[in-house]
Image (cartoon, rainbow, N blue to C red; front, side, top):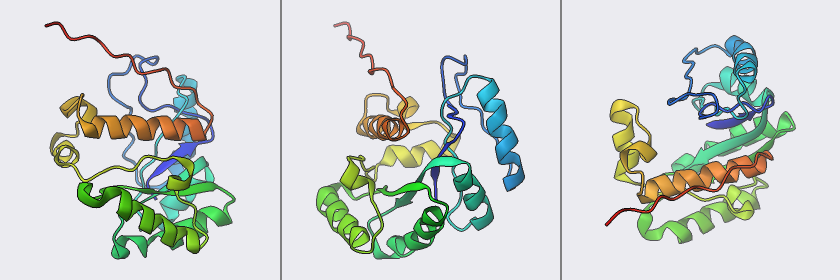
Length: 191
Protein backbone atom coordinates (compact mmCIF):
# COMPACT_ATOMS: atom_id res chain seq x y z
CA UNK A 1 0.00 0.00 0.00
CA UNK A 2 1.51 3.34 -0.90
CA UNK A 3 -0.61 6.43 -1.19
CA UNK A 4 -3.44 7.27 1.11
CA UNK A 5 -5.68 10.31 1.31
CA UNK A 6 -6.35 11.29 4.88
CA UNK A 7 -9.82 11.99 6.28
CA UNK A 8 -8.79 15.42 7.37
CA UNK A 9 -8.01 16.40 3.77
CA UNK A 10 -4.47 17.35 4.48
CA UNK A 11 -2.20 18.63 1.77
CA UNK A 12 1.43 17.78 2.34
CA UNK A 13 2.89 19.92 -0.45
CA UNK A 14 1.27 23.29 -0.75
CA UNK A 15 2.27 26.77 -1.63
CA UNK A 16 -0.61 28.17 0.42
CA UNK A 17 1.22 26.96 3.51
CA UNK A 18 4.35 28.72 2.27
CA UNK A 19 6.24 25.46 2.06
CA UNK A 20 8.73 24.84 -0.71
CA UNK A 21 9.09 21.24 0.38
CA UNK A 22 6.48 18.89 1.79
CA UNK A 23 6.53 18.36 5.52
CA UNK A 24 7.99 14.91 6.03
CA UNK A 25 7.38 12.89 9.16
CA UNK A 26 9.56 9.77 9.08
CA UNK A 27 8.09 8.16 12.20
CA UNK A 28 7.55 4.46 11.76
CA UNK A 29 4.87 3.66 14.32
CA UNK A 30 1.13 3.94 13.71
CA UNK A 31 0.60 5.98 16.89
CA UNK A 32 1.99 9.14 15.31
CA UNK A 33 -0.41 9.23 12.34
CA UNK A 34 -3.52 10.74 13.89
CA UNK A 35 -1.75 13.55 15.80
CA UNK A 36 0.36 14.32 12.75
CA UNK A 37 -2.72 14.57 10.55
CA UNK A 38 -4.40 16.88 13.08
CA UNK A 39 -1.31 19.11 13.09
CA UNK A 40 -1.27 19.31 9.28
CA UNK A 41 -4.97 20.18 9.34
CA UNK A 42 -4.31 23.04 11.79
CA UNK A 43 -1.75 24.34 9.29
CA UNK A 44 -4.41 24.47 6.56
CA UNK A 45 -3.44 21.36 4.65
CA UNK A 46 -6.03 19.65 2.44
CA UNK A 47 -4.32 16.46 1.26
CA UNK A 48 -1.66 14.16 2.63
CA UNK A 49 0.01 11.24 0.93
CA UNK A 50 1.14 8.47 3.25
CA UNK A 51 3.59 5.95 1.85
CA UNK A 52 3.84 2.69 3.74
CA UNK A 53 5.78 -0.42 2.81
CA UNK A 54 3.53 -3.17 1.51
CA UNK A 55 4.77 -5.49 4.23
CA UNK A 56 4.19 -2.92 7.00
CA UNK A 57 0.86 -4.43 8.00
CA UNK A 58 0.23 -2.52 11.23
CA UNK A 59 1.28 0.85 9.77
CA UNK A 60 -0.59 0.22 6.52
CA UNK A 61 -3.76 -0.74 8.33
CA UNK A 62 -3.67 2.33 10.60
CA UNK A 63 -3.01 4.62 7.63
CA UNK A 64 -5.92 3.02 5.76
CA UNK A 65 -8.22 3.48 8.76
CA UNK A 66 -7.52 7.23 8.67
CA UNK A 67 -7.91 7.49 4.91
CA UNK A 68 -10.60 8.23 2.37
CA UNK A 69 -8.75 6.51 -0.47
CA UNK A 70 -6.24 3.67 -0.59
CA UNK A 71 -4.05 3.30 -3.64
CA UNK A 72 -2.26 0.00 -4.07
CA UNK A 73 0.68 0.36 -6.46
CA UNK A 74 1.68 -2.55 -8.63
CA UNK A 75 3.90 -3.27 -11.56
CA UNK A 76 2.42 -5.34 -14.34
CA UNK A 77 4.60 -8.37 -13.51
CA UNK A 78 3.03 -11.46 -11.94
CA UNK A 79 5.43 -11.34 -8.98
CA UNK A 80 4.22 -7.86 -8.02
CA UNK A 81 0.60 -8.56 -8.80
CA UNK A 82 0.54 -11.48 -6.35
CA UNK A 83 1.06 -9.10 -3.41
CA UNK A 84 -1.99 -6.94 -4.21
CA UNK A 85 -4.90 -9.11 -2.97
CA UNK A 86 -3.75 -8.88 0.67
CA UNK A 87 -3.78 -5.06 0.62
CA UNK A 88 -7.07 -4.99 -1.26
CA UNK A 89 -8.71 -7.37 1.23
CA UNK A 90 -7.54 -5.22 4.14
CA UNK A 91 -8.81 -1.97 2.57
CA UNK A 92 -12.10 -3.58 1.56
CA UNK A 93 -12.53 -4.98 5.08
CA UNK A 94 -12.19 -1.43 6.41
CA UNK A 95 -14.78 -0.22 3.91
CA UNK A 96 -12.25 1.99 2.14
CA UNK A 97 -12.39 3.00 -1.49
CA UNK A 98 -9.33 1.39 -3.07
CA UNK A 99 -7.75 0.98 -6.47
CA UNK A 100 -4.72 -0.75 -7.88
CA UNK A 101 -2.60 1.78 -9.74
CA UNK A 102 0.16 0.79 -12.11
CA UNK A 103 3.73 2.02 -11.72
CA UNK A 104 7.10 1.31 -13.31
CA UNK A 105 5.36 0.17 -16.51
CA UNK A 106 7.63 -0.68 -19.44
CA UNK A 107 7.26 2.13 -21.98
CA UNK A 108 7.42 -0.22 -24.98
CA UNK A 109 4.28 -2.19 -24.13
CA UNK A 110 2.64 0.10 -21.62
CA UNK A 111 -0.99 0.19 -22.79
CA UNK A 112 -1.15 -3.54 -23.57
CA UNK A 113 0.56 -4.55 -20.31
CA UNK A 114 -1.68 -2.32 -18.18
CA UNK A 115 -4.82 -3.53 -19.98
CA UNK A 116 -3.91 -7.20 -19.39
CA UNK A 117 -2.89 -6.65 -15.75
CA UNK A 118 -6.05 -4.65 -15.03
CA UNK A 119 -8.21 -7.38 -16.57
CA UNK A 120 -6.55 -9.91 -14.27
CA UNK A 121 -7.35 -7.86 -11.18
CA UNK A 122 -10.89 -7.04 -12.26
CA UNK A 123 -11.59 -10.74 -12.90
CA UNK A 124 -10.67 -11.33 -9.22
CA UNK A 125 -12.94 -8.51 -8.01
CA UNK A 126 -10.10 -6.07 -7.36
CA UNK A 127 -10.78 -2.56 -8.74
CA UNK A 128 -8.06 -0.81 -10.68
CA UNK A 129 -7.62 2.85 -11.40
CA UNK A 130 -7.52 2.03 -15.11
CA UNK A 131 -11.31 1.60 -15.21
CA UNK A 132 -11.64 5.02 -13.60
CA UNK A 133 -9.18 6.92 -15.80
CA UNK A 134 -6.10 6.73 -13.56
CA UNK A 135 -2.89 7.40 -15.45
CA UNK A 136 -0.09 4.88 -15.03
CA UNK A 137 3.55 5.72 -14.42
CA UNK A 138 6.14 4.37 -16.83
CA UNK A 139 9.63 3.15 -16.08
CA UNK A 140 11.76 6.28 -16.48
CA UNK A 141 15.34 7.05 -15.59
CA UNK A 142 14.26 10.32 -13.99
CA UNK A 143 12.31 8.51 -11.26
CA UNK A 144 15.41 6.59 -10.24
CA UNK A 145 17.47 9.81 -10.22
CA UNK A 146 15.07 11.20 -7.61
CA UNK A 147 16.21 8.55 -5.15
CA UNK A 148 19.74 9.93 -5.14
CA UNK A 149 19.01 13.26 -3.44
CA UNK A 150 15.30 13.15 -2.61
CA UNK A 151 14.28 15.48 -5.42
CA UNK A 152 11.00 15.10 -7.26
CA UNK A 153 10.71 14.35 -10.94
CA UNK A 154 9.16 17.80 -11.36
CA UNK A 155 12.38 19.33 -10.01
CA UNK A 156 14.72 17.15 -12.07
CA UNK A 157 12.80 17.19 -15.37
CA UNK A 158 10.03 19.81 -15.02
CA UNK A 159 9.00 19.55 -18.68
CA UNK A 160 9.58 15.82 -19.06
CA UNK A 161 7.20 12.89 -19.44
CA UNK A 162 7.71 11.81 -15.83
CA UNK A 163 6.60 15.21 -14.52
CA UNK A 164 3.53 15.01 -16.78
CA UNK A 165 2.70 11.55 -15.42
CA UNK A 166 2.99 12.67 -11.80
CA UNK A 167 0.87 15.75 -12.45
CA UNK A 168 -1.80 13.63 -14.12
CA UNK A 169 -1.74 11.10 -11.25
CA UNK A 170 -2.01 13.87 -8.66
CA UNK A 171 -4.97 15.42 -10.47
CA UNK A 172 -6.66 12.01 -10.68
CA UNK A 173 -6.20 11.38 -6.94
CA UNK A 174 -7.50 14.87 -6.11
CA UNK A 175 -10.60 14.22 -8.24
CA UNK A 176 -11.26 10.92 -6.46
CA UNK A 177 -11.38 12.66 -3.08
CA UNK A 178 -13.25 15.75 -4.25
CA UNK A 179 -10.44 18.29 -4.18
CA UNK A 180 -10.40 20.88 -6.96
CA UNK A 181 -6.98 21.51 -8.45
CA UNK A 182 -6.23 24.68 -10.36
CA UNK A 183 -5.25 24.30 -13.98
CA UNK A 184 -1.56 24.03 -14.51
CA UNK A 185 -0.21 27.38 -15.64
CA UNK A 186 2.22 27.21 -18.50
CA UNK A 187 4.67 30.01 -19.02
CA UNK A 188 5.78 31.04 -22.49
CA UNK A 189 9.45 30.60 -23.23
CA UNK A 190 11.29 33.62 -24.62
CA UNK A 191 12.99 33.06 -27.92
